[in-house]
Image (cartoon, rainbow, N blue to C red):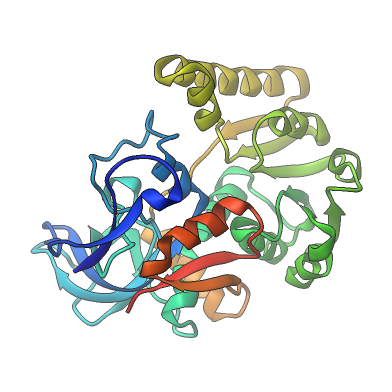
Length: 332
């Protein structure tokens, strides 16, 4: 099969397309014929090697943690799916590899593909959808009538988080560029904050919850702008910057210490619950998200569709930070 391979960490041009053997599913795994795979910012960080402290696959490897396709083969203990089923998933980093014609992962990480979406649209949703789902429903516990600030509303995560928060009944604040104000409002944002002209910490002062995805000083700012007793989901740990600045071992310790300091300071000075979180590769949650997609509550937002051979361009586009929605690879 054809697959993207990374033989050494570095810039996007380190990614190449090669012929490799098809993977074989283990007892609990399904093998999926990949029709489309999305490219995420975390993929770029893994490729660059900046997350080696926590995600360190053996080189060479095939990246990719978003997939939509058709089940091609199943392991002996698989009960949820059969060959021919259309599925979408965000496999864990331990079984990533969706930039390929076939990929294997645990059946519990997959869900039936929403019937009203094609594979390109479906592939754009799992990772950001699960991140938004876990942040808003499980960690922030957003309820009807509350207010929430979501950063980078025009990005892959932001576009889905806005729609989900609105569905939950929240008043939604989001940051974006001037050119995206009308766009994020069309997704459901009540207040669009032009980050070049306005201080979001003043506009969104005393919101009930914050989805913090910018990192750095913005983590501390989130603690100060949320109301007393509010909740903050920290989606960016700062691990990559810490390792770059201090080296692998000290970078990990520095990042862990900073996150603990932020959490303790938030709790004891303002009664705020602040915690780092990552999405869980959970098929049951993904199925719930898929149901909302079929109801028309959540709609995918695609920035661009590229081929497997354009993987370098895909990573360059994602790293630019200027995508409106998701970059997706059409593979089959």
